[in-house]
Length: 114
Image (cartoon, rainbow, N blue to C red):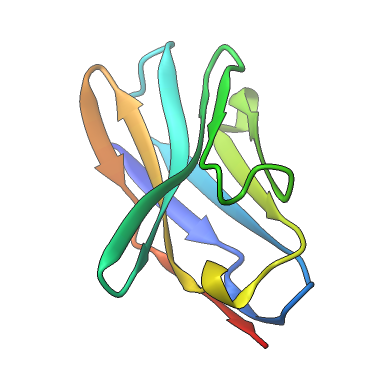
């Protein structure tokens, strides 16, 4: 059974930074995609994703501010968030696509105060 455990959310002032981590466990395909979605009231957005081969994808709203990275040996993905804005406030969910199955973490709250 695949499990994703997230950490690193919290409260930060606008302009600040946070780093989210997501550790995966269980049987995972060698090619996989890890990423982050965020859920704000009435809106869900794919923030960033990264394949096991290193290809990345970012939402336009976070390009230049957020960076996704992975440590494949540790089965962990990271989301470095810089220059945070109040509109980045959301619950952030780690996701993993493995063998055509999508898995989700429990979510971590990120709140950016103005």
